[in-house]
Each structure stands twice: as structure tokens, then as C-alpha cells.
Length: 331
Image 1 (cartoon, rainbow, N blue to C red):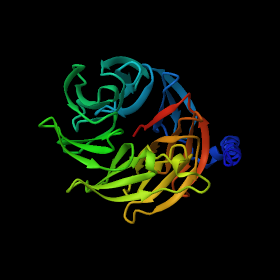
Image 2 (cartoon, rainbow, N blue to C red):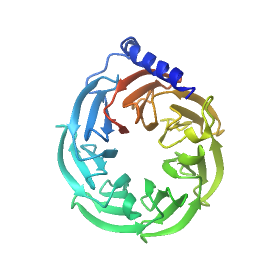
Image 3 (cartoon, helix red, strand yellow):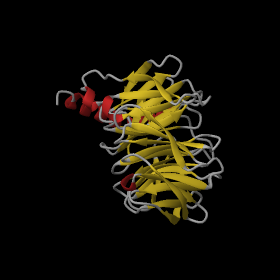
């Protein structure tokens, strides 16, 4: 309880400063990118410009979570956990145009390199399932450990990595053979992934031991753990989940969940370079196309924080619906 008052003060200060902070942004060029934030409790995707000004809202299916653009960027694909479906949103019109039926409590997904197949973690069925997006049909599924979540498909489309929150492993799945070929032991309650630009390292957030595991993709073994500490926070309150990599591949940014901070890690040295106070339960992360702004969805304070990556400072926090989950930024 001792850190609540300073945290609340800091969050209020960020909100009060929003108008003044917006002056730091240049005037947007015509056709500049949009920022989409899925809101689990509002059953909407909120639309912002890159300055953090809300410009619209899209009604979707129930409990929208993970989002990605289709291969041609004409659709937003959104996982809806309480509808057991993937929503298909037309970017041009901002309308939900259809759904793909999924299994029970889908959570995260990735796409095949051609964008035609979605590999979805089905939490309550303990499988990762492949769906053909055009036909809206299930293709196959692979059994996993308990509560699968994070899914990452390699650029060659041959392998999928899937976390099991209960088993504390990363499953290595041969997509051609449709089976698990190895289980990599990592930390407690592994959640999400980032693959290094050269493909040599797979980074995995471990929510319940305040770490990130670095996995050697050649040997499929954990080679290092990076431990997080936050001043004034107990280890149990440092719960890393969301993660993304900078455009130049030199930094990995991690949302530290209930610690209400985002950490920046130097990829080469594996050293935590900076920690930035944001909103409550920071998970979803997404970069502006030029890499200058990082958008952070704060699930328990119902807002989104904008971070200037050059200075490593939060510059604005804006309302983002009830329980924002994922940030998706258009190219």
C-alpha cells in the first residue's frame, strides 16, 4: 500500500499534462498511421491517431484480445475470448464484416507467412489450433500443456512456438508434422514471445517469477534469464507479460504488469537500460512505424500511455476503454 499514493499522483500528473504534452508531436501528415486498442469489457476496438487522440470505435465480438493485420493489411483480425471467434474487421470502413468460429476461450495467435492460416491458442481446450481464414474452417490442432497462450510462427512458416502457462514450458511445434517436437523449460507462467531479428534468440516473458528467458533457437535450450527489480515493488508484483522489439532490433521493451512500469532491455548486453512508470498492469505494447513512440495498454487503469523512446519518458496517458488488452499500429 505504501506505493499507491505516489503512483496515483504520477498517473494524475500524466493525464493533466496531456494537452501540453501533445504539443511535442509534429502535425500529422495526410494518411498517417492509426493506433487500435482492443477493449475486453467494452467489446470494442478503439481507434486513435498517433498523437493519442481518439478518433473512433469499432463494435466487435465479445472480449476482444489479441489483434493482427491480415497479410494485405486490409483487415484487422481480432480474437474474441467470450465469443469463441476471430472477428474480421474491414480497415477501410471500420466495420466488423464476419467471424471465424474458434475453440473454447481463444487467447493469442499468429499467422502463417502467407497470411492465410491463423494458429490460435485455445486456452480451455489445451491446444493450438490452425484455421484457414478464407474458408473459416479448422484445419488441425496440436495438444499442448495447460493454458496455452503465446504463439509465434517462424518466418519460414515451419515452426510454431507456444507457451504453456501451467507446464512452464515453451512447446516447439513442427507445423508440417503437426506435432510437438520439444518442450523447453523456462520460468513460471510463460506468456509472450519476441524473436530476435537474426532468429537466433527467442525471448519469453515469465509472469510469475519476474523474468524473461532467452532461448537459443539452434539448441532449443534456455541460455539466460533476465531478472527485473523495481524500486518499492515486491517481486510478486513484477509480472512481465507483453513484449515487443524496437525497429532497429537493439532494444526489447517489456510490460511489467502489476509493477506499472515498462522496461527497456539492451538486446546485446541483456541489461535493463531503463524503467518507465506507466498505468496499472501494463501489458499490450506497440510501436509507431517510425519507432519514436511506444504505445502501452494499461489493463487495470483503463488507459494507454505514450512513451517517447528517445528520451525514455512517458509523455501522455489517455483513456482507452475498459480493460484494454492489445495495441495494434497501422504501418
